[in-house]
Image (cartoon, rainbow, N blue to C red):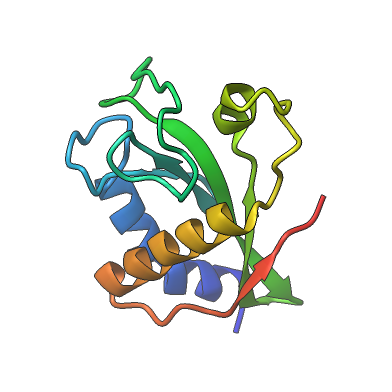
Length: 137
């Protein structure tokens, strides 16, 4: 394996994330934002983790009202992708609950929802999903 080979292995996932880009695709399932080494996941008023009811969301530059939930990146062992790193930071939820923007980092409900969305994305891309690890910090 090589770094380039591993990125080619994840290319169908990234292509699917770009197809389901929240910035340009109004489809309800389009909640992703592809990056160079992974993707972000956004929630909407109709599709969100438990505990998000009533959180105000705006469209801004995106195709629909949304709020950032998670980042998913590749975990490496030398030149091989061995796992996914999931990290959540529900800024708008923290603001809504008046708990502070960073107080709900890696909340279990957000991790579970983001992991489900990630699993679904990998299934749509027909790529076997590596194990998930929670990224701390």
